[in-house]
Image (cartoon, rainbow, N blue to C red; front, side, top):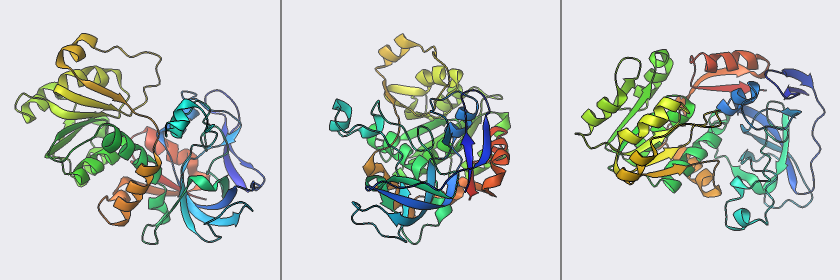
Length: 344
């Protein structure tokens, strides 16, 4: 079968190769991939700016149908529509795992990052990581459940966004747009999103379609001043940082109100980012660094999408065959797309 393989350390070093169909272990299932979404992490891996363990097949945001079931697997059958968490390798016995957070175990080697992923026709994985994909959720929408679950974990479970709060999101990329949709679903009173002049096309348009109350082009206006104007000088209750940009991270401390919160999801790709530490102290801010997703967040994301409360189909701007993965990467890096789905 054909697969998009990151075959070595360094920038680039990705190509389509013929690889054998995976063989499953007794506690695993084999999934026929129906759709796989391109993640920002895939681009970081391309540029050698993210942890990864080559050689491996890329792709960790996917949906599909079970085509084979291991001998020890119970409750799953050939033909079941599924999505899968990515937290393979979690040891299950360390303090973090035993505390209920296996997704941040130091031994974790995620699908498509540490082991073979879903930029291909078939992917094998543990049955314990599966979630059922409802019949009314198309496969391409199923492929964006993984990043949606990350945002649910970060925004609702960790940073505890409440109805009636005010929110600003820094960065209108895929995670920023998903965060916007979740904020609207949660019933916030005000939500805006920041970006640059290069975002004035597809991404700001998509933000408005998803219900943003305002957008801020930081190349043309001061985001701190704009946020304070929109909140009568108070600042927002919650800032969701998805850009990974050093300036946006620094400015977050001035856009959040006293006793407010910052929900940090975006990866910077840098070893260090300067912050106004004392400003955070004097405002008594809470800063939540967020990573990966919980089992409960997957169930919440699936339910919200299935019931039509979270319009995940609106995140998707392009669908391409797997062979056009390079075009997909280009669309995202040139900010011409929000979510790109590859079809094997």
